[in-house]
Structure formats: structure tokens, C-alpha cells
Image 1 (cartoon, rainbow, N blue to C red):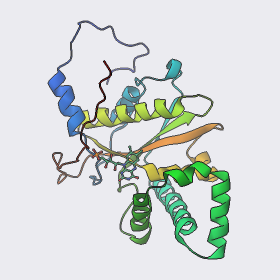
Image 2 (image 1 turned 90 degrees about the vertical axis):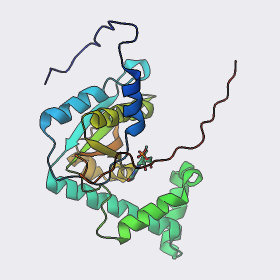
Image 3 (image 1 turned 180 degrees about the horizontal axis):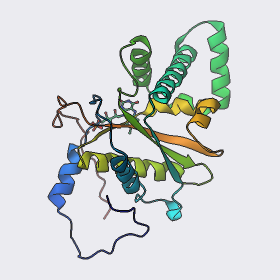
Length: 235
Ligand SMILES: Cc1cc2nc3c(=O)[nH]c(=O)nc-3n(C[C@H](O)[C@H](O)[C@H](O)COP(=O)(O)O)c2cc1C
């Protein structure tokens, strides 16, 4: 495996890339939720992260760091903390008892924006993950890649999200599957967990992606629909 590059390679031709292949790569990437147990080798994971960091970033600040988790015990702890976060959120948002209502009031005060953006499907997802003990928020993947963002940057969310998509496409290109796990955001509420995940002070976990070889029964051509393409042409 080649050494990670420090500078971008020269653009040799005007259009050196086979557009049909790139289109096929982008369109055929699917969120993978069933994995083989086969571990992903170090150099392959390293290569994915190397490609992730070629994403654009505001002022080229590159306000990201990457954490790769493969340790079974740590994966189990991540799972447990995430479930706890979902359980608490479900109680706060859906239970009528006074204690939860008071906590909801506190949430409202501290995170007013959250109430405007809560999609009911999020609760359905959380309910099925917390009630059904056989499901796994992290889809039993053999590895996770965390993209950490430096909150001192004004664009860390956008930058880290772009890096996460690079990661997903690079993984797909080499036959690996990924799934962006939004519920992993709960990890940010546990100081202990952040410490275990080597999240420095002033940094936050922007994304967590599962990574692994898709279970051999996974169909890459299973449909994932898209809304009607809407464009406003302002010529
Ligand atoms: C920010 C974000 C959060 C997501 N969170 C989850 C999640 O917690 N669990 C999951 O299985 N998929 C999650 N997904 C994957 C989406 O469900 C998936 O991208 C969407 O259904 C489209 O399917 P596709 O990726 O196969 O095209 C998330 C995707 C994004 C971008």
C-alpha cells in the first residue's frame, strides 16, 4: 500500500476519470446493515481514512481526526452507552410521568433547537433498537470509524460530513460496506466514553460509520429510492 500523500497529485489530463465508473460508484453505494465477521486489515482501514481527508474543508482547515475502533470490549461499551442515551431520550420525549416532564422542560431550556427538528421516525427507530435485544445500533460491524470535529472551526460539521462521505465511497470502491450511524451522537453526552475514544477537549464526534465486508447475501442492487429531482434554474 502506497504511503499517504501530503500534497494532491498533479492533474495530468483535463478529464482523466471514467465518468461512467464514478457514476456507478456513487449510485450503487448503499448503507450496509449486515456484515461478515471477517476483520478489515489495518492497511485497508488506513487507506479509507487517507482518502476521507481529501474532502474539501473551510479554508482547508481540515478540522478532523479519525478514530478506528475494533476492540470488542470497547465496541460493546459504545453500544451500551448509545442504548442508554436512546432510552433516556425516549423516556423524556414520550413518558407522561412528572419526572420525565421536568427533564423535558430542562431539555427545552438547554436545547431549544432540538424540539423543532425531532422527526417521529427517529423515535420509532430508537424504540425498535431499545426494545429488541437482538438488533444492534451498529449492525454488528467488525469496525467503526469515528470522524471527530474541532468545534473551534466554523465549518467542522460540513467538513467532517464531507470526509464521511469520502470514506463511504472509498469503502464501497474496495468492496467494503459502511453505514453512517446517527444515533452514535449520544456518545457525545458521555464524558467517560469520549475519554475512552480519545476525543480531545473542544472536539466532538461528528460521525460514526460502521465498516466491514458486506454479508455475502447483501444485495447491492437493492433499491434505495430518491425523491423527485428538484432544481430551480436561475439563469
Ligand atoms: C446523518 C445520517 C445518520 C444516519 N443514521 C443512521 C442510523 O443511525 N442507523 C442506520 O441504520 N442508518 C443510518 N443512516 C443511513 C440512512 O438510513 C441511509 O443513508 C438512507 O436510508 C439512504 O439509504 P442508502 O444510504 O442505502 O442510499 C444515516 C445516514 C445519515 C446521512
